[in-house]
Amino acid sequence: MQILSVTAEIFPLVKTGGLADVAGSLPKALRAHGIHTRSFVPGYPGVMRALSDATPVAEFESLFGERAILIAARAHGLDLFVLDAPAFYDRQGALYVDRHGRDYADNWKRFAAFSLVASQIARGLVPNWRPHIIHAHDWHAAMSLLYLKYAGDDTIPRVLTVHNLAFQGQFPAHYFPELGLPAEAYSIDGVEYYGDIGFLKGGLQAADAITVVSPTYAREIMSPAFGMGLEGVMNERHADVVGIVNGIDLEVWDPSSDPCIEHHYSARVPLRRLPNRQVLLRHFGLPDTCGPIFASVNRLTWQKGMDFLAATAGEIVKNGGTLIIHGQGEEKLEAAFMDLMRRFPQNISVSIGYDEHLAHRIHAGADAMLVPSRFEPCGLTQLYALRYGCVPVVARTGGLSETIIDANDAALHAHVATGIQFAPIDEDGLRHALRRTFRLYRLRRVWEGLRRQGMKTDCSWHRSAARYAELYSELLNPDMRLVGSA
Image (cartoon, rainbow, N blue to C red):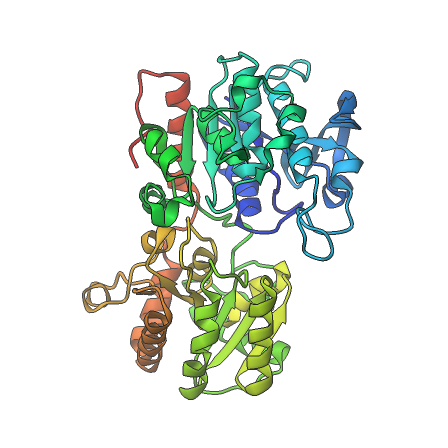
């Protein structure tokens, strides 16, 4: 089976978040099911530098007014199609924003062009290659399904995965005539969205199957609280929605061989983990104490609940703990954490930005990973934490509630607990969770049991890749029925 995966990010070539990790690791996991994936990505500078065996397969003299070349290539074990369009993707800023953090004004055009070419690949643009299924990820790629639908080609099933419904690709309606879609596409059943253009909304209407990254999130987005204005569409399409929890790449995230960390260990030899704690404290210039090291490797945003953490950091300091923050995001939150570091230099250290190697070292050295998200479709940080023996402390929402077993009395007695959940999801809820964490940390045998149980958790793609394989088979053989089982 051949799959065309359409994604704006893919690890290890280009990454801003979990989308890249999923897009990079799922194709590997699907190979065990006889499924071959070609991933189509924009030709960002980092992508272009990484390519090998690059072969031009199509040229565009005027793709939304710009010259572009479609390249078939390989990189890091991934089979790729790359849209080499320097006018769209060779930028000095980040993937979606300029150096001042402002969205590129032509994002609508950059990803409409990307999606249009994806639809053409699905229809046979590349000689001797055509997919059985097109699988688009998030708003950047969602329009590929709409272009395919209005091209009148119903022979290729269309799958859309929503990694986070909060990011929708909404643009002014006056761009619609430039998209090259028929007039009827600007309708409630198409791309029209509250008088604007909605790229994600259009993809949701065009998809044959919609996957979201956890069954709990699949239920949550049917409600106004989590639907982000799209709950009406999601309820209309509920029979075609399935929740499939994400996995992680166990080769990239493996503490027994990880080149990013100094001291290797595993669930069988967990004590070898201890020196990584000292390495981490030295890196951040923090003194060693007998208290736990809390960490958060996260976007510093409202969604991620980082304002809760900023407001409750004093609880960690008061009880003799250490807090390490690594991430970037809203200026106000970045400033709040930098102020906390100035106030408590012996207890709190903050690193603004994102470094993949440092993220691995933090997971290997910290005692507890804080994920206080207001909503979290799936989350990968808590899965990395489990794998590395860093006890997750998470809000009870979305995929966090499914992947972490709370350390309540019954779960601890049954030796199945893997972390700490909290609700309500607010400052008081997090503060109570921090206090629970301190109490458990002081019970050394209980804490080590919690850590070991987490490391034994299956965080792989094994079950989820099988679910995707079943979904693909169902779409190609409609007599089967998996969709709607969330």
